[in-house]
Amino acid sequence: LLLAGALSGLAAATSSCSSEWEGPKGSAFSNRLRIPPLAEPEPAADGAKQFSLDLLAGGRAEILPGLTTRTWGINGPYLGPTVRVNRGDRVRMAVTNRLGEVTTLHWHGMRLPARMDGGPHQTIEPGATWRPEWTIEQPAATTWFHPHLHGTTAMHVYRGLAGLLLIDDPDGPALPSTYGVDDLPLIIQDKRFGADGALNTGDVDGGTFGFLGNRILVNGTFGPSLEVRSELVRFRLLNASNARVYRVGFADGRRFQVIATDAGLLERPVTVERVKISPGERAEIVVRFTAGEEAVLDSRGEDPKRANDIEEEDFTLLKLVAAGALAESALLPDELGGVPAEPPPAGARRRRFVLTGSEINGNDMDMTRIDEVVPAGAHEIWEIHNTTYAHNFHIHEAPFRVLDINGTPPPAYQRGPKDTVFIPKNAKVRLAATFGAHIDPLSPYMYHCHILRHEDKGMVGQFVVVRPGTENQVSRTLPQGH
Ligand code: C2O
Ligand code: CU
Ligand code: CU
Image (cartoon, rainbow, N blue to C red; front, side):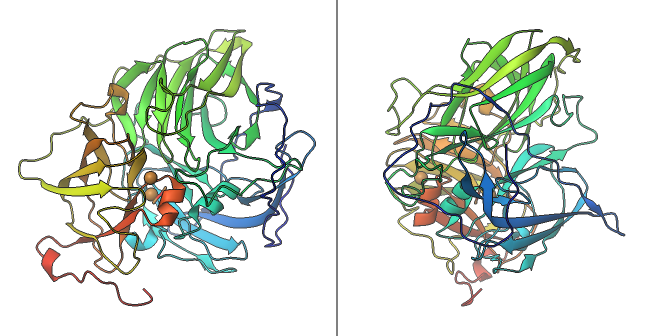
């Protein structure tokens, strides 16, 4: 149950006190899974879909039984609405910052001009409205949005600023797609709570690996359960946690099908028992239910549990209770329409990125430095060499395929189009990325570790996309105050 958010611009009351909430870990499943509402587009004369997103502080949510948690949210007390658009749509956003402090709103997974991207350069001052607009020119996918201000991304996301942006393709395959019925978002986050119910923020900006919580929320719901009413259900998994990696599956070991990775549909469904998602990653899965049954979605750490030098705990996520009679679902199509991975063209440019504790290629983030200059439309191989504990790697604008991890191709369910990839400790990962056509030598896109603590500490690089042949004429330093 979520209470109305006050629009006061007050900072959320938070605590870093040592007294932690000692209630159950979450296996009670006594709360109905909250489904983020769909954002209603306001029609525009030119046919564009307009959405208003208000970034709010001072939300009050009843997350733990009988306690009030002060949260941040978008158009509501915690998390945001789900924005749903079609391929080909013109989208116009009005993002109003009512937080009382500066922030940004980034469209993670969206292919769009860098000035519309919402990265650390597109700051929104308190009280201001930012109005990006663009045309959706990419396949159906589950994308999302979250703040991206350099240094405070972890805290802003942790307090509750995140939401989904779903792209449908009217020419795509027939898939379960009735929102809230057989097409359900599952936004997975870990938190710590004080005894009074306050979000415990003490570790958000600390530690080496980043914040790891001990209670799991799904769509902002603690201990959630959901009634299933159709034979097939599509879940859109988003790991919107600060640092934690999940391996999602069912307690009873049942198999299910993965139909999409971060940036779009697979060629065909892949049957698995578990999917691994690190912060920022998405996976769309389809699960079959039998009338009257119950199933528990959970996360199981890798064996051995510290294989990647990160803490991997087991958590239950969501109880699913199938109704006594289920609506019949069409069979999943054999072909999903996802484009097969093409081998990178001969002579594709290679770039190397060495990850250390908090740096990429020996550098911290510098908002005035352009690290890489990429010609528009380029196909490139990016090699990420991790010399420490686990990280992950996200590239703005440019979808990629994972070619290999330590020389071995990724599991079949990770071979679809992606924008974020887990990088195991001491591993070399090769990506084949395709860059877009939005030329702007003065406005960079980011690539970074999506463990938000690492991102805030500076594990971020900047690239610009330029007219082919002009790479050497482009300034590597952005004008002051850009
Ligand atoms: Cu999800 Cu650069 O971000
Ligand atoms: Cu992004
Ligand atoms: Cu990292």
